[in-house]
Length: 331
Ligand SMILES: [Zn+2]
View 1: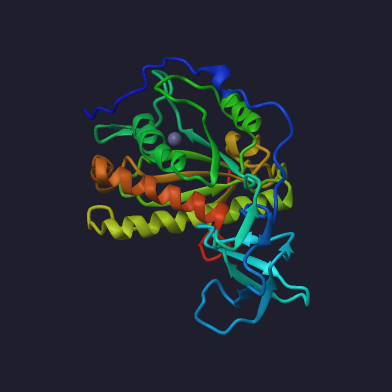
View 2: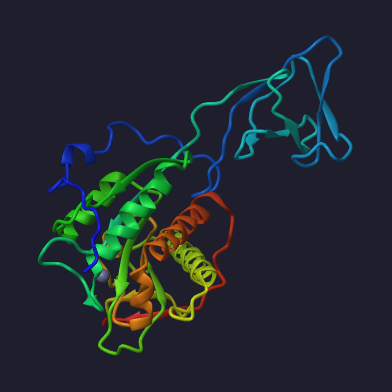
């Protein structure tokens, strides 16, 4: 029997879960892409000119200059804020070093994003799959809460991290998606482990919101998020490199209620109105997969994979179109 520390809180602290009031912060750039904008003014002695480079590097020749007193009304900063992408008067784009001796930057808080994580199942009634001495709700919670949460909280690009449960208690599906919708996340991730009567079934699959209830753009963002998460889990399982639980790709799946009722099959995907995915990390019912899941360090590997899937989705332009996609109907 495995032991995981469980939050002393028996019930969700609902007031703590309530979203802040007021309008959402403005979102800049492409959906799901974090962009910093602001005003930069050039300072220095008379005659100083700030070189503008073609890329965020001082290696090449300057392609232009900004003079003292000149300013750029809009820039995009690199993640570390070391370089600012600016547009010159002639319309060319280039980069200046964000040198505090010569650049004054006024930058409002970046448009931050919220994520909502749903550790699947919970409580005495809803344990999820149970096999090989593992109980799904506990594995899900350990990965999604104890291991993934610190990674998300430490990421300054993420404003808030919401959880549908923060302990081992029952949470209705209705509450899960009510909470998710109230939190208005850029991405919703439900974390599960799979089970099957056939112990040979194993591997990883990620489901995404894809049904007629979703808008085309939310469905497309969900599909991309699912693929990037699947690829990140693949990389982590390959990095773990154990023949006990080799990487087995069960695909990135659009699961619909039926061929005629083409809404998303999973309630948490169907009733959430933003990009939403559900990861089935591995099969508890497969002895090899289960053996790996019993390792604390392996569960940390999975959490890091989920973290990479989330952040690749939200903060990179990775296309997420190279997965083996398939469609399932009903059970
Ligand atoms: Zn489950």
